[in-house]
Image 1 (tube, helix red, strand yellow):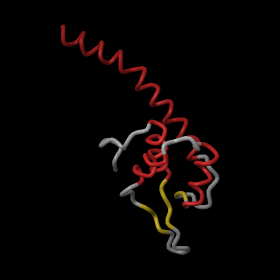
Image 2: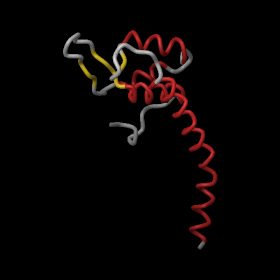
Image 3: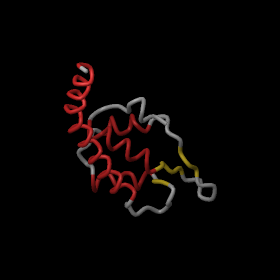
Image 4: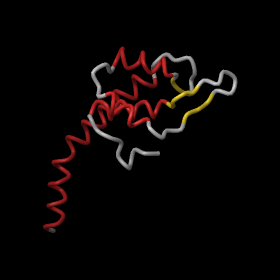
Length: 108
């Protein structure tokens, strides 16, 4: 029973941070997924620049860029433009806001 109480207390302490992270994720995801972009499947580099300038100009750009290292890009077969998937932009922005690297759980 003592272990259950300890676990409960730890979870009770962690819950506000977890909830705050969930709210931040939802806000960033809404902005990114509703951004008016040329290709539905992802962002061009120019669109990323505009998105960040308009919405997230104060994030840690080094952490944002680090989060995008090693991602899978889509190359449009007609235009040969490289596109970065929305979810990767979301994760990069979160890392930039929270001034941290991607966690193992976030890596795909």
